[in-house]
Length: 367
Image (tube, rainbow, N blue to C red; front, side, top):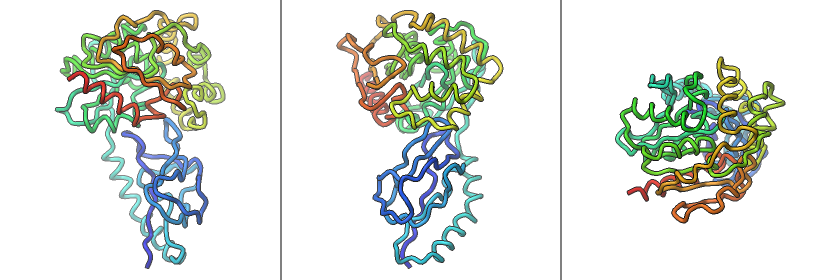
């Protein structure tokens, strides 16, 4: 009998346990090459094109668009045209009989975030990578959380002890702020490092998290900034003000679409996940205070260019609609600048391999 090859729900990020086929990009009966985009997969953070790990004839689409399935679930079947439908039916039935046990094992083995009690309150973080590897801290931007690093953290965890944290006012961390400006948020990062017994670490900061990273020069082995705040005055107030004020999906979705060069990457699950976070007790008040402290009147509060201490790299998406890439103009020669075409404000989600490469090269320059 000709070989039947399963196509399963991919694990697109460290914390991903389930996903949804948003759309099939190839019809049943199509010949698909390995590496060719076969479906759009939606997670809680982004809709991503899934490149087929195998080639062959797509004989059966198992997953229906809109159906949430665990990582590893059968979503499709490749088989030679000579393979009869009965054989495929038997294969699917046998696979699905084993699926419940496999899904349970996958859920049990998925890493979980940790909540640490620090000098500034509870800080939630996700850790991955060898415990004896060089520490690397991932600092998200305004309105984000540790899950935003879901694509790049697994790559970096092959080399570093990665720690992706939720800043105060965000995610699972305390909603009580000791201060709302970048320096005060930086104190929370210091507090977590102290709690974990880490003296210095490689720092990676996105957007507002970039400004936070720049306040931590004495704790930085190297610094990589992704579309950072702190290098200029301009910021898009439609996004910063609108994000705080949005209370319904139809208000929030067009704002989230501004983060990406390709707006179709924003799915309903992402919108619903962000709305759930914004409804947590204290979240709206914390976001309001952070926005007012860092982006008063729709402008960035101050420049932190003097804090750029090598080794430092800056990554910007050329199509960034939140903080323009032009703010990288005139950076010191010691700053390695990478501008990514076809990329918006979320380079670490849109181009994770490129971001991981720059982060690693910058860390290597630290010696």
